[in-house]
Length: 233
Image: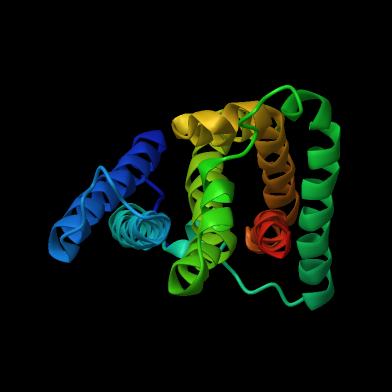
């Protein structure tokens, strides 16, 4: 097996590369569709978010595969991407993620109740969307985001840190950075403690299980409960 040569710089290359691709695809989509960027309807805005999200995660995947092919031993060897044979724990961690989201939501009520805008843009989009736009948003936020964010933060980033610092430090740093990057959406500031919390728990789980299958399940449960609850409300 080849020696692992990727590191922190590769994480930032993948992360910002994905954002760049998403921006380009979004601009091109607006041009092709002939939409007015300053006066998008709710569904147009949601469709753009979904299309941009798919482009971003596709870029994440392509860049990850390229980096690991040239600088490492592949997804399984380098990032712990394996099929967990214990189905029970996977399902259990999915529901644990949903429970964690519920618990964090309750604990943050005193803070969020002080603000008029206490939701992320993604939640507001769910409220205003329907049809294909809503389905695309559920796919990107509830399924694709947990998978690819775990690949990046508990795969590439956390494992790069583990080669340099103790596990506890690596978990805290990766969890904090995970929460901080969500501040690209300013409304996420009020729920920053919850985002850091899911980052910390996911990091601990990835280290303890030596893979990311269970942290993906946890993260998916965390995200999906928000999306589905918002749709049902």
